[in-house]
Image 1 (cartoon, rainbow, N blue to C red):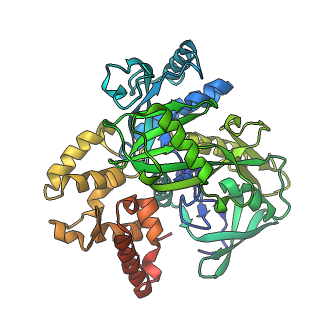
Image 2 (image 1 turned 60 degrees about the horizontal axis):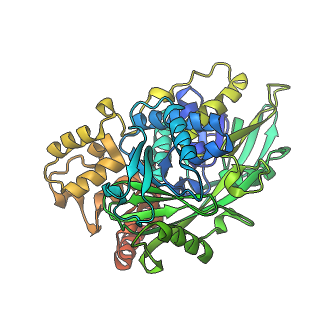
Image 3 (image 1 turned 135 degrees about the vertical axis):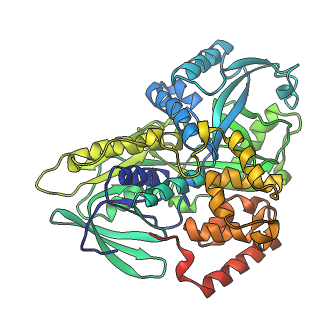
Length: 513
């Protein structure tokens, strides 16, 4: 890429906000370069609770605008990516020690109606003593409420936005850090460095600082930039156990401290339990789950379930650092999940190139955040196109009527030799792009080496070729969740195979920019 021709936007950060902004901007006709110092979604955006939801508990903090926006976005995203986003029912056992029944009913009534719910079924009252969803719950809890939200494969949501941005002309550079940036006349002169140590310089008319937990670090490296806004780092940790109840419903559990814990079905036979809210001191990348957090999560689950998991049942854990806007709330759980922009200068003046920094946000509202960010930049790009993403599916999501089940049935007829579990896996991760993955394949042997579970060589090569995957972690933990289902020996064998592939052909191992 030439440093002579400036980009309109240089987006710093390959999480959900950065990828969403790059996609939206490229579709409006701007030239865009996105730089991510690690892998796409390697930070917070692959370590979330994996939900597209309105945020039921935010109603207690009077975040009505945020909840309404999130509830509207829930259905927009359900239409845009039905392969990686799908409805889920949540059972909320009533615990009168935390909240009276009338307050819960009121909150759920608002939750059902604030966002103009169309696709998802409404809240219902549940008698836990007779309903199947109450079977795993202790007999001391007799009543519950059941409501709707959506599941999302968070890291794939990031990748799909980056893919669409690239398809619309954006450059995507992974493992490429912004080392410094300085204003040079009417442009930003930006120094980049990649994982090999190579350095280059590019120019841009505008910087977008979407670095999440590292947003303040980026500002420190940008000459002449500062902000009175501050980010507040709050760690959320999750544990993954074997699934310990029947059915595809999730549970929302109220704790004595008035926080809530999600217990969600995960990867068919697993359960995802979280999250905690812990203030973070130090580097975000050093955050990890602590013993006290594990004890906390297990204790909440044990309060409600007859046969709760123990430490011995934990198969995986992870911690994500949420870059929340610092609204000075004393309780980390009460810190707003809304987002704030800081732009300098606020309007075109003396040809000074702007920098837009993002503080806060949540995965559900990323698309709307991107729209609002570009609205803020419109004075600097008066010829920029209009908002367009609300009615445009993400890659793989272009299914008639956003009907995943109907599409999957047709896909299985097209590839009858695929085992059902593998067909569902490919359909869920790649949607209509699965035909690209399977092009020319006529039997299971055409998928190449089998590494264990549902992982075959063809899928790994597809991810390397098309989705910027370069390491075993990129493939096993972010692009897919195969890592949860492979033995240590199988994972080591795959890593060894991939290393050999990288050693033999280092250059093609990154998707084209």
